[in-house]
Length: 364
Ligand code: MRU
Image (cartoon, rainbow, N blue to C red; front, side, top):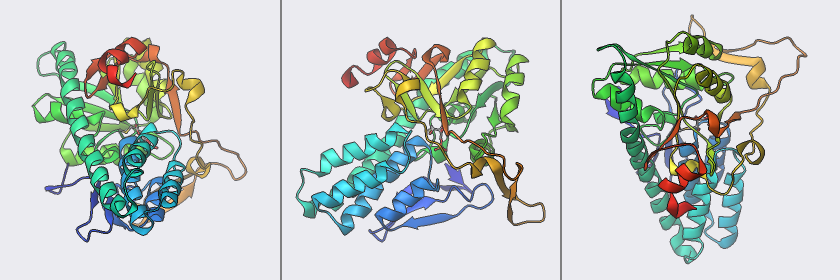
């Protein structure tokens, strides 16, 4: 992704050989700021406070977090402690466990003196793999978009709707749900994206909109409640979202509000696709509703809003009455029956056990 003409990833090892750079996503879209992570505590805080977020980027940050931890304490106890601490940071995205377990399996058999260097190399590998996976998801999704565009009047724009941010900022680069969109736009297909604001944290309004703006992709931010209306009125040709965890039977867990979009798409016969990189697929579970832990976040994210004043400067305001309780589930589960297809790095498959097994026989 280019920002002001310069290529960026969302996470990188700093050239000092002892720290990691990230983009502080809590400051976007009002300020583009980078932060330096120097310790396990910094990495855990970055994930927990959502300075980094999005399932693939959470996994990548955990990988670098283990490196920072092992620089300070490469013992078996140090490795176990770092694994446990990072695993607790956010419960829903399976990429976190996937990255931590992969690193631990690789690092534990090594002599402790070699662990830190190996952890840094593995974290870099996870990042490069993420970029390659997202490129392949883009290539797998592009023909779907081309086919939908071909059904429209010549030159008419293809209208996509997306929820939350499954873009460049949610990954190391390119994004998952946005990868086919960027490819379509870059190849000259006229696309337009309806961006759900995604209350309460507004990842759509703040992050997806900022990304699309930077890349020059035509888009319009809408309140979450407007999606059903546009779906009913033929203004959406396809919905594409990301995921924090897909079960072996194709249930999809993603940002709260995704389920309602899937219902509305289904009711109106509009295709609903999920960009699902393999590290987000949890082959150990089947039933998303019963088996996926849903993060319960602070009610303050519901009762308060932060934004930039027209006069400049940021302000936080309360939008609910003092004393009204609020609840804040971070994610919901869309049953597989509402999902038209999963766009993976190995191609597109139905959201079924058989569909996933065919693409991922090695993961069964
Ligand atoms: O709470 P967040 O911002 O981490 O939630 C992000 C999402 O729900 C994304 O859609 C998901 O992680 C997929 S990112 C490629």
